[in-house]
Length: 338
Image (cartoon, rainbow, N blue to C red; front, top):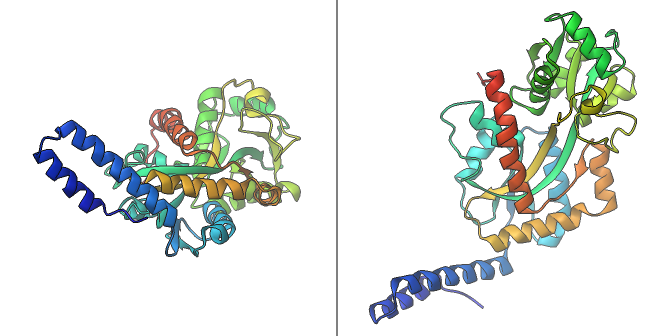
């Protein structure tokens, strides 16, 4: 069945002139628009879908490609990954794209925390996007260089308090999860550690391995090979509960006597605001069916992430929570992007 929304509204307008009240007109029009959205979702997609992501080979890019390859068959159309580098470029592009489900964004928490890091942002992370699913989360891992004389979080805190300002920690990007994990730790533990910013996780890991910095709240996937190789020593994870990704490690909250300490790296799929709700639901359903497969969960597990595929409403709640909690961390620490 095809819905011609324009003709329907014109027909209703004529009826309004004949006595249909404005309130009734608005209600009927909204119903017709919703019906048109359902009709569109029934045929969606009829052409390739583009997912805009950050830099190639990054965590977001890898996740986007796994999902794209996994749902291409069930959607019946090719899904193209469009890498647009770092910063706010991917989000800005998608925020301005047509709300038809053919241009999507795969982004990390940096996208919705950007308003706290810079002025004159070109998009609003809440008003300009429709969350589809929080696809993955991953703990940050507190790791130290082998030369650091601390084998537990409590020992590390004691060492830092005895040597204020003498030890450095790596921030893989300004305002990213690794950076905010460090700032939250500094605040809650009452320690003075010098922040050393790097341009990406790779250079930050190399800085830690070389001894240029002494510790790091590293993304789990990026640091896992170095933990296994014995090049860094892992002390704890940033999640509120122990994670199967690192079953041998305690939480920073418990091991460091820092109740409430929690931070994670998140990646999710979003559409432009006003994308028809039936299309958002279709995309969510395709992703969640794919992510529930044991082989897919293992694939993400091997990348150091937990496969979630939350509902759109749950993803929206995570965004609001991050903006409230981590936004305060950013403000209190005076973090600004250059």
